[in-house]
Length: 104
Image (cartoon, rainbow, N blue to C red; front, side, top):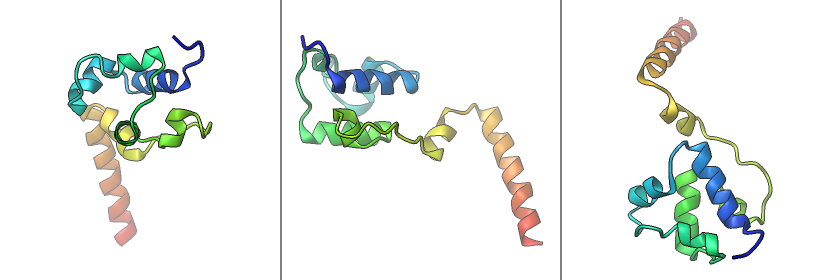
């Protein structure tokens, strides 16, 4: 196993940020079991899989493979998806009130 497997480390980082598991991501993306764990051994992902994972995590492929070291910005949609129903309702209430003030 490679000592410094940047792709696998960044993959794990994104998994932790999503508060999920590699197995769950494999299921969601339709990958075979342990498909992502195999990258721990130093294999590089195919271009197709790299793009799929980048899209899934809302980061650039360059970030995942270490060509870009900028910490990816989280999209509002990703933030919203993590909120509870109660919090989403509160955001909706606040948004409607703001919108009504804007159109007056």
